[in-house]
Image (tube, rainbow, N blue to C red; front, top):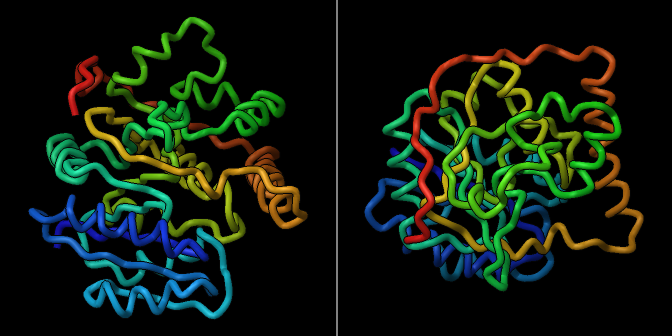
Length: 278
């Protein structure tokens, strides 16, 4: 099997339906499978999946274990040579899967891939080629980690945002809205750290990939729409604990014994391109 698409869901049944429909359309020419890991939803998500998506593999948790554990559960039953981790609030372009897989097949030294992400209003999401929201960028600058994320351009004031939106390039961090990984690479790097319940799991995993000298790429020749429902600030203790707790977990994990990133020298394997055609 070519591809396993894994979606973690918690009370997002309406958006999940849109996500599945877009993925089914995008995967019509691919040997793939859909896996939904539901974290104890109370919004009829399970009933909807049983009634309308009988061919989708469903793991129904009775407890909300968080996104990292849900992804691990999905990968554990995945049969694809590639695994694609997407959010339930994501709509996939009709050619997104074909183009992303074609890039990975053509560039065997790329281990992980992210694509151009657009918001609900069609605006470019800058974390597409950084994988980091503004609070995380500030956090890495504050604790002195910015120098370890040079490909994320955290401190480069001379970069050209418009050019970067359409430039295929190597990046440090894969955004969690769309993470395409080789299954063999996932097995090599190891599972997601399940202490990252809602935020930061992609940052930690991408950083571990970089420590091993693996390459992550941003590929803007296709797109997804990400509604970013999980990133909207909420005035609740649970949100604050998960969001800022992830930063503390990351700092505690790496700050006191900073490993050295392996730098693999070589030419850029894919020339910059600035077209907007989808």
